[in-house]
Image 1 (cartoon, rainbow, N blue to C red):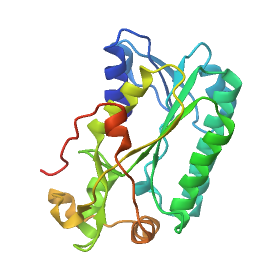
Image 2 (image 1 turned 180 degrees about the vertical axis):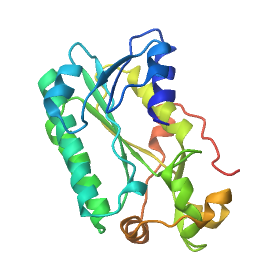
Image 3 (image 1 turned 90 degrees about the vertical axis):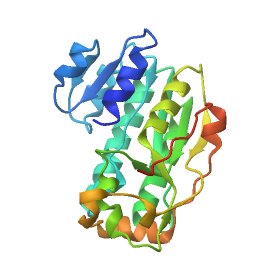
Length: 232
């Protein structure tokens, strides 16, 4: 919800209609003027119906920091398959999807790479924004960063930058391609996780980060985003 709410509010500023598809109703979004459709993220039929007359579809996938086992990986695949099916069936004008840029040499990275490729192969037009690990007060990665050790260097992205990129991409008609939202890696030891520094990263996330995460910064130039520091 830390992506959905601020992104929805940002899009509403432009004067357009915003519809959010969630597994539970959200009254704050309704009060701010959003339409809310409720259904399982894996229910492709309900999601397709919710996309009726929707111009731009922005699917938000599970954060890699919450993925613990192969069952969670399968959930990511099912959610992405439902999103691809619904985007094709509802014939939305454009799809914009953020995907973490984890190395294909890890199981977690391969899962997200497959998701990315599925959208590129089956949805047109589609804009893919490949991100570093997202940093913000409610992000799972914020909770686990302190357990990764001083030797980790990871491209970390302020969540506000992702929201700015998605909002800017939404202003384009027929946008299609792949852009990177990451830049230079931060030493994890320099990130202030505060009281959350004792949190433990899951084995799959540790393996993925050890395998590598390398994303560039083309999205900052393309969408004219002033990069925010994640350092506190």
